[in-house]
Image (cartoon, rainbow, N blue to C red; front, side):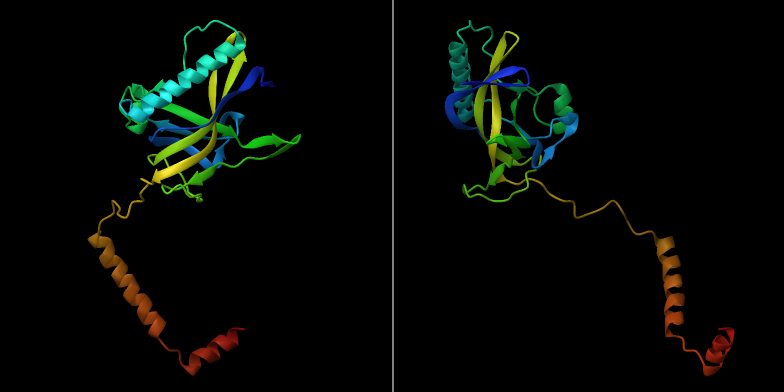
Length: 219
């Protein structure tokens, strides 16, 4: 059954939830949606190893879903493209991923319609044991994505799209720096020490009763 969304006819494909191969996370907005370009959506990009047998099986499954959607539309297949891209030189400069590595974006709207009402959507996260866990996903983490694929058709063109359902964090590769670029500046350390000594002397000083009398006279 097709639904019209944003000018496109969207059809849920009879493939159920599909689990992605293991990949490296990039541009992860899972706990908090990305509201750039007024899209307000959860999203994550996974960069895959093109030689991974699991990736090859995943690609074959997506091509089968694309073929299924084309058959349901009753139109000739044009290019058989699936929603997969490859890392170019510009992305390589930003992420360090090898040029030519395949990657794919998984996304879901931050709000969804249930029983005619707009309600917040959430993306569940799981740990390496397959247990649901409130995990923060960072770029560089080793992850899988779970998605439901739908077919779309607009202006005579068609394809398939992955709607993100959940993310499994297999390994958190995010680290915080424990060092700094700062070193000891001897001239300032000596100056600081002199100031500290004066401060310590002032803190240890006592005032006579005469001083108290003078202060009282000023009130």
